[in-house]
Image: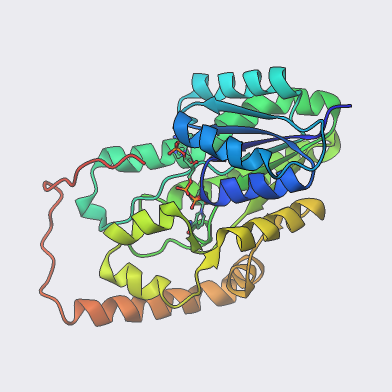
Length: 286
Ligand SMILES: NC(=O)c1ccc[n+]([C@@H]2O[C@H](COP(=O)([O-])OP(=O)(O)OC[C@H]3O[C@@H](n4cnc5c(N)ncnc54)[C@H](OP(=O)(O)O)[C@@H]3O)[C@@H](O)[C@H]2O)c1
């Protein structure tokens, strides 16, 4: 008998990799999708050591999920190799923080393309077969930035907000079809992505994000796994994220007020920033 099959985009690094590791120890076969083939193969080699059953297998597929045809091919090939996925997790993502006016338009477009459409393409490709079997779950990895547009994250938050709309709509449509939908909102998590973000975060953003603790990828992955096991829709690691989801009318105004004060404390000590839409920073694609 085949093992359950989990397809994880972004499974070669960070939260996606940790999810893949915990799924491996839970007996799943894995399909990992990311762009970099070398990192995929390294991840696969490491994950094979976590297998607990002889029928577990791993398949890696190099693809850019922001390109619909590549995302569809990844899902089709993974399904051919390991069967229809029982679990689809879309963790592939990018984050390029900075002052709005310093960031070239292409970065806004690319961020939406990877973080939102990259998840949509994969879910859309996997859904018909999952629906036909009337089983499985799609898990979107959003972010705390999916609840609140934070200073310096104008490239990133919109795609994470959009995922919420997608997840809610899909959940409503799929309720009677046996396919579950979850959306996870990790807080800041110690991964290669966060290390890169810290290089370009505005000072204001650094002050705001320093207020909350940084999670480890294994802790976030454990929380997501628990949410999946319980069939939860919103997976909210930690009290702050839980409150943003459950009591947004109370919590978000307080957070916006507090972040506004932090931003003002920087603004008051600095010369006024001049408009600079013409000065484009280089396009960063990670
Ligand atoms: N770290 C945090 O603080 C944090 C907080 C909240 C939410 N999140 C979300 O959690 C998810 C995982 O983040 P992470 O911190 O684990 O990041 P990470 O360590 O940088 O991993 C990102 C993964 O996505 C893949 N990827 C990136 N762009 C891709 C593309 N266009 N097509 C296919 N694969 C792509 C990367 O591999 P390649 O580069 O080889 O393609 C890598 O496997 C993201 O959606 C992120 O927005 C992270």
